[in-house]
Image (cartoon, rainbow, N blue to C red; front, side, top):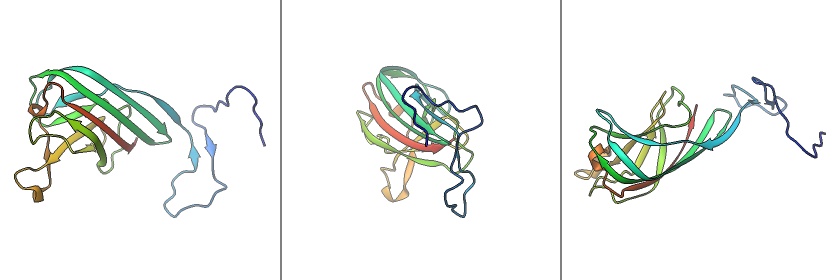
Length: 167
């Protein structure tokens, strides 16, 4: 047993808390908790062909990283926007995502986007620092999702979002 009445425990770089005494699942690859971090990050909008010029009323985002698992949330409210072209995405994730499958993310709330163009889904792109934005196909809802494009943004549009992905 260790009792610490004041101060912190500092673990040398490359080391961590080893949980080797616990039972192992068949797919286990590590039992070492070697990282924890929390902080803020600055999300921005980008277009696949060219980036829009965006003035933000609010641009707030936070993250927590435990081991390789990164949790992010953010809120963006556009004051004004102009230019740009192509599929719209949110850039600036605090850590590059693993080169695995796309990771589904959530839109908690979106408001004041161009009619029938409100983002409803986000995907963390593999091996990147971006969230791709999608909306329900309005001409044929059975067709699934389609990209939200830069011209879908309107002055005053806002979005709350969250994601969990692997670094």
